[in-house]
Length: 124
Image (tube, rainbow, N blue to C red):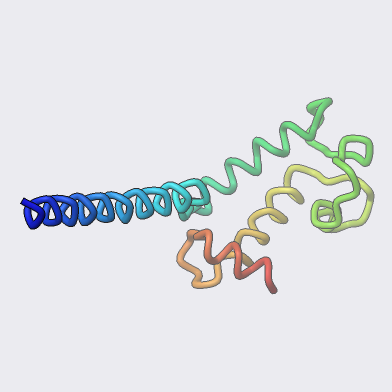
C-alpha cells in the first residue's frame, strides 16, 4: 500500500512540475508578446502619401507653404528641406526633401524601407 501511495505522490509531483514548466513557458511567452513590435515595411509611395498628409497638417492656413510660425518646435530635419533658405518650405521642397529622406533610409534600394533599415539608418 505504501508503494502505491509513494508512486501516486511521485506521479502527482511529476504532473505538477510539468504544469509549472508550462506556466513558466506561458509567462515567458506573454512577456515576449508584450514587447513585440512587428516588423514594418513602408513603400516609397506610402511614405510619400503620409508625408503629404503631414505637410497638409502643418500648413495650417492651406497656402501650400510652411512658414516659421507653422513649424513644430525647432526641427533641423524639416528646416533642411528649405533649399533656398527663405524661411518657407514649399510643397515641392517638402516633397523632394521627404523623398530624399526615404531614399537615404532605403539602404538596399528596393523601393521599400523595413524597420531594420530604418533602425540602421538612424545609427548612421
